[in-house]
Length: 129
Image (tube, rainbow, N blue to C red; front, side, top):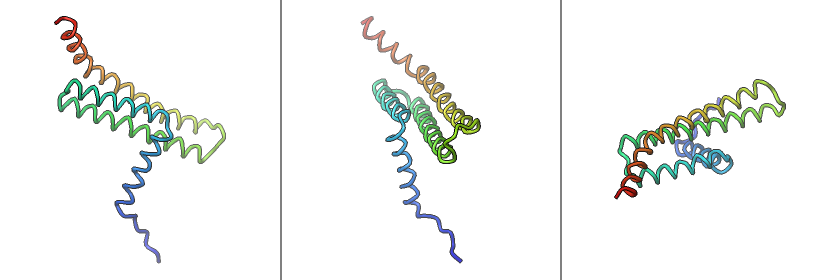
């Protein structure tokens, strides 16, 4: 009998990184999320946000990007199963996309809560002094 052996951990990581890279390369929304990630990182560096604020930003980055990858996987599986327009396929795709949208909106709101005070403080320093 042949035993089912798992691939070495390095190969598993390779597959995972390949999945991330494929998502970035092929998905328009993932590119948008990556641009947002870069802009938030630049703003965080510029405003010297606190360690706790960095942790919140990193957690939100992870949530949004992870959900976008899951959404991409759901869409790929649905497309693999059927090319027809089916109500259940639509529900699967729409709810996965909705999860990403909801998380991205919450991330944007939290980003405003974190960054608006820094922007206002900087604007006050520039225009009042």
